[in-house]
Amino acid sequence: MASHHADRHKVQDPYSLRCVPQVHGAVVDALDYLRRVLDVELNSATDNPLVFPEGGVADSGTAATGGGRVISGGNFHGEPVALALDFAKIAIAELGAISERRTALLTDAKLSGLPPFLTAGSGLDSGMMLLQYTAAALVSENKVLAHPASVDSIPTSANQEDHVSMGSIAARHARLVEANVERVLAIELLCAAQGLDFRLAEVSDRGAPVQPGTGVAVAHRRIRSVVAHLDHDREQAPDLAAALELVRTGALAELVED
Image 1: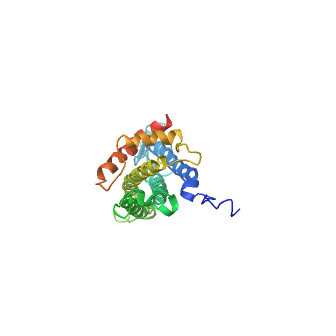
Image 2: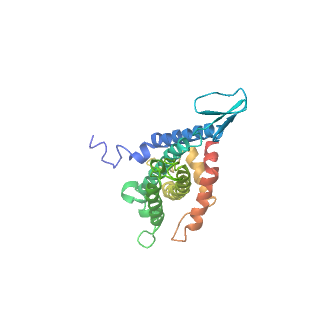
Image 3: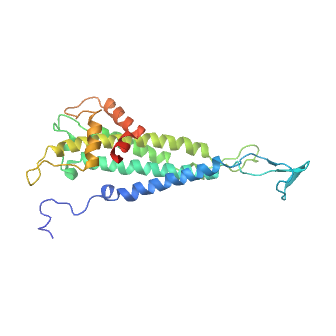
């Protein structure tokens, strides 16, 4: 076994590569759950009180108004949405967390076999190093934002409203997490394209150029159509903005799927 792997062949890939379907699939499931909850709640009656005309539902705790009923209830409580949003923002944060780990693998020469920080001029140029810093900072910020808002509550209205969902806070934090993760994914795109540039320049054991899979090749061409290879250090804000647009619009995903 030792001799078989003497050529630095990796026995196993790190989890951030090997477990992509499991993590990404769980994120998709969480977002599907949020969609189902929102669909139910958007089509529900959340007024208080609920007013039923004559012939409506009769129940204890109802007040008669003419021939109808006025029922004081709690359908306005946002707990279903708050819990679902908390679940979703945790899931989205995990999508960013595993993406940042793949970016870290790409920029670490000992793990990737690529030039350090994905630059040919390592030592003089920083390459993609600061992009990985940025991804790490955004992922760390998401750890704070992903704290469940729904576990908190504070009484208002003279303790009449003594338990609330904090769903609006969960929603705002979810949007911030999503925006951060979009940037983390854009950074991974830039680093992956840069790494593939170096791989494509290599020669395989059989003397033929290294060729990526069809979907990877299409994605690489699309990224390179808006962001040039990083030969030397330059301001990378425009590069990040261009990659971010591909993430936000879904253009890259649609292209690869087609």
